[in-house]
Image (cartoon, rainbow, N blue to C red; front, top):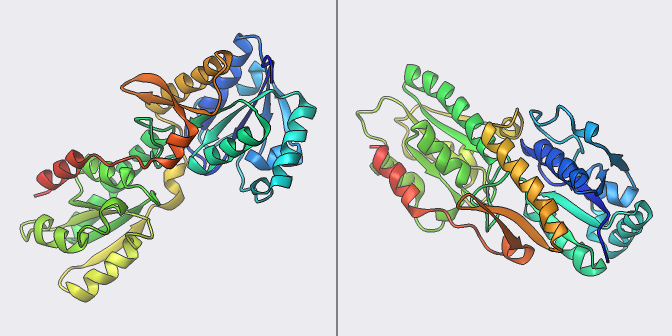
Length: 326
């Protein structure tokens, strides 16, 4: 590819608070280092359709505090085909883009990996997903904000659960990972978290009823990850109604509420660090890596590792929740 002179930046997959902070950091770090920047709208779809615009420093003014993504995001079936990727590559070349920075989750990074391999393009990934499920980074852009949104919601639900002496199942996001449910439960003082990582090991409802829900408690809150493996909050509410009819059960599904909102200071700083590090990586000649944070240090994680390896749930966190929910 030779020397990189122009960076393309896109956001893909589910939006996450802090993506705009990352767009801002990548754009300004690139300009600071003498590179030009082009914003690609609607993720990989914009690469295929040629929806690309030059970005100057002022294009990213006053966005660090805004949730969502100014570059928009969309699914793109065309990019999943070799023909679609060829069109995307042709548009890149036409626009003079030499390297790509992709902000998104595992699906987005998988697309970047295939694209980079087929056309020998330097691609750098930034972990932007509220699920916190990418391997090789302690945390992902948007996770902290989503966790605080869950915390705020559960605090409010607790008031009505206590007033009515009810058992609430609160469904949170995390299709394949229980980080939001588990840490949300610890932070909000919930009685249990039902997560996909342990769905095959134990009957999590039975364990909760036996251990966590004592008669001395007049209300209870259980966080449930929305995974197919857990069956979601409605599934557990139905089970309680059938198996433990003595409980007054309610369900709250937080849904896309968790994706929006102004990013926390933590997410703004994380996105800024990772965005600046993405340009450092390109200047160093790195390719096919995700920029992560490990013990507060910036690290480069090969796409293959970040995508293929499952990020483990810390067992000691499960024990903390179990001990503190008695």
